[in-house]
Image 1 (tube, rainbow, N blue to C red):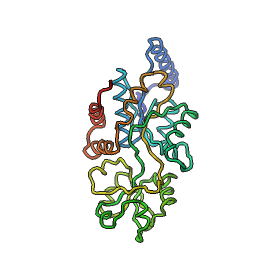
Image 2 (cartoon, one colour):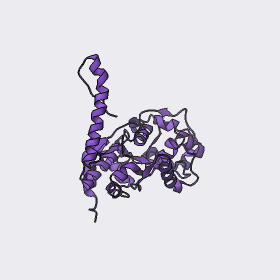
Image 3 (tube, helix red, strand yellow):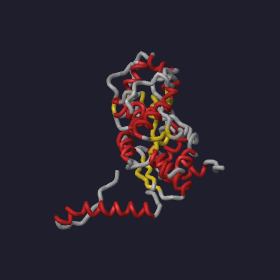
Image 4 (cartoon, rainbow, N blue to C red):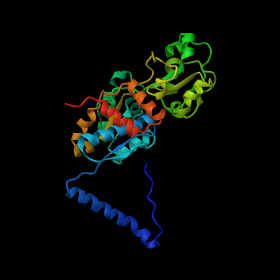
Length: 310
């Protein structure tokens, strides 16, 4: 979100005139750039969790490589609505988003009757309401994932949420705070499955869910399908056999004005379409969150692993 600049103390009159001077200088700077034929740098944003930071860095580095131009990063902005508002306001030019999140949290549409039509409807609504463009998906679906211990799954033969709904003993469910409030979260889950619960769900930070599951403090958690720990822990993601969750295809959302300003940006970003499987995204997330590598380094290695464009 950026920090306010720190200025030394000046006289009251100087403080009153400073905003006007800064505005004038900003205007002159913009005019000078326009005269030189140099548009402002593209600004890449992201929400404030590991996967988003990685995807934002991948987008920024891809644009720098393909366009040969400087890209400004405003990663780790905050939650969905903060990132969306920054995009609409023009504070950023693009950020990674998920179709299910756009459907339920931004557009606030009812559960989709046809999950296959979610991308087309979301793209159409964003274009007509805000002149925002959804690029072709990156290749993975980061849907909600209800996860249990591998030993419990093997002992009970539970593989799907439908199986879990038939268990007589109530589940001790651990969830993140957002899962309780989102219409596509607990409400949607219980509408489809009516899981037997042992008391109210236990809410906690997302980073604590897997620790609580390992420590037997809960026996089911509402996590995400691309969590890095899914690639290293003995756990089972229960299949959503009644399709209670909408698809959460990941894609970059871009201001149409930015694409007009830099026409090559779309082709550069869509070189990434279809390149990320859920398993690959889990691995990238684990490298950052579990192995404490820098997102910039993980993003660079991912881009270097892709086939060279023809």
